[in-house]
Length: 335
Image 1 (cartoon, rainbow, N blue to C red):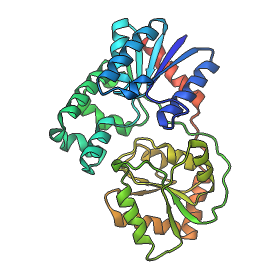
Image 2 (cartoon, rainbow, N blue to C red):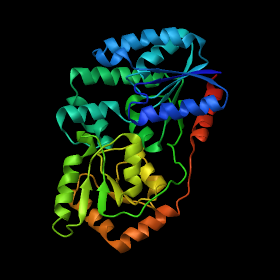
Image 3 (cartoon, rainbow, N blue to C red):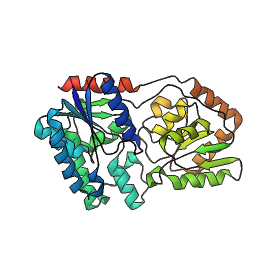
């Protein structure tokens, strides 16, 4: 078969969709399928609307020879890709990823609303551009051949407001890789390594670390970012990983920490809670004191060893080969 993967970013660019596209392409090709990756190029320099139109025209040139299309977001590439696929009679599978509209709203307003509360409490506060994005995103997910979520949590948040057919959805969990080398930490550095985005809740996280210094001066807050390979080296050598976002569907940083047997502190507002609740420490992202208390708790040697052993015994894997097989199985249901 010939498969087209539509993605806004692709290596050497850094980001979850880029790695997802790269690995999905490799696994499809390993199964003797031909794969074309269609990614933003000139579109990055174009304003909203024009970039979608240009990508739509590129889709019209590429899709005719494809058996099916995989789109790795719900707006930037998925909207023009769904329009082109419908016009050409092609099957298209959308993998949702994060929540573009909520992220955009939080960055614009600074309103630190939890993802789970956003659609119930803030829809009347959207500006004109955000209202258009919502309407187009809703049209996009409703008109996809299949909608793939990485967690049930996100699907339950979206279903009442986007109004798609639940029978046309599937869950394909994120990548859980085999264990990687891990090195004993030389300091108590908690690795955050997140982009400076408001929905990542970095201001409250910094406040929490300031509180911990009063009781434990050895604790280090490390929020520096690096290219993927260099960052993985830091993960392998860090004390712990921390992520306290206002909503994080299936954060790769935590799954990377697990592969390196590193304890982690994670927001309760995540789709990973059900899978990881017995091996991780979870916090209320709106409560600075709770975050600080959990940092101090994990800084204790006895508590640290307890959670390190739990993670060491966690051997669940979900390989890229399995993920590719699940995408192909979804296509078999709709072709």
